[in-house]
Structures are given as structure tokens and as C-alpha cells.
Length: 180
Image 1 (cartoon, helix red, strand yellow):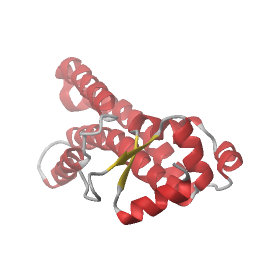
Image 2: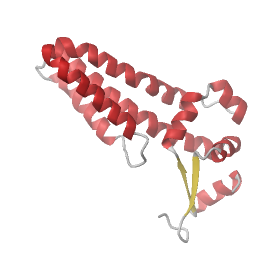
Image 3: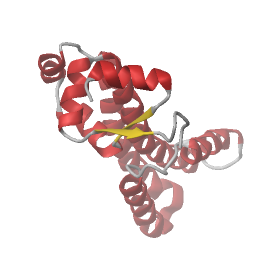
């Protein structure tokens, strides 16, 4: 299917257009703005900035939380630090999966931010906020990449051709015009 036919069928509701989360993340993090501009004729500044920033900030948040773990938990930091890193690694590995949503990580982050109003120590609060912010940013990286790349390929025929050629965009027909 060519781009104009895909857009027409999307408007009619006869196809679904999906984007591979891992491929979308790679599109925004492996390609620079000049490369994207050269390949597609358009520069998606905001999309690129959102995905690249969350991709870079997520591990920095976890590293910052490791630094806060020692004054927050003293000797227990020997246990808490590696557990936080393992949780982060698990979150990172499962985020590209299509059934993972950002809701839980956003809820965790909201709970961590609300810890500011508790009597816990400042390093515990900072550790909690940095750890959950890292988890949220990992999910945001993949969710936002897929959502933003989908919008980019719908409005840009060259981006659609590029992504379809590499298997990043998946077109699925629906059953008699109804969404599956």
C-alpha cells in the first residue's frame, strides 16, 4: 500500500496502523535530525527532542537515585541500590512490549512526588522521586516514540515509505470496516 491509500483507509477505518515501539525508539535515538531531514524532507524537532531527552534522562535518574541511596538508607543501601537497578532493568526490557502502558509508572511517580508532604527524610524523598522518574521516563521513551512516529508517518509520505521498508510500521486490515 502506498501512503495516500493508507491515509484514505485510515480515515475510512478499514485498516489499523501500528508502530513497533522498539523500532520507533531506534528511529528517534539512532538517527540525528539532519539524517531524518535528509531521508524524509521534514525535521520533527519536538518528537525527536521528547524521545531523545527521555531516553537520556532515564538512566541519569537511576544513577542519581543510587547516589541518594547511601545517605537515605545507610547500610541498607547495599540492598536497595541493586534492587532499584534490577527494577529499572526489568522496566527497560519490558517497555518495548505493546501491552505495557505508562499509567502505572505515572501513578508511581505521582505517589513519589506526594511523598514530599510526608515526614520522611529528604534523601529518601529524593531517592523515591528519582527512582520512579527513571521508570516513568523509560516507559515514556517507548510510548511517546511509537505515538509520535505514527503521527509522523501519517503526515509524511517519505517517512512512511522509510519506516514501512524497515518493518517499523505495521498495517493491518480490519474485519469489514470495524476495528478488531
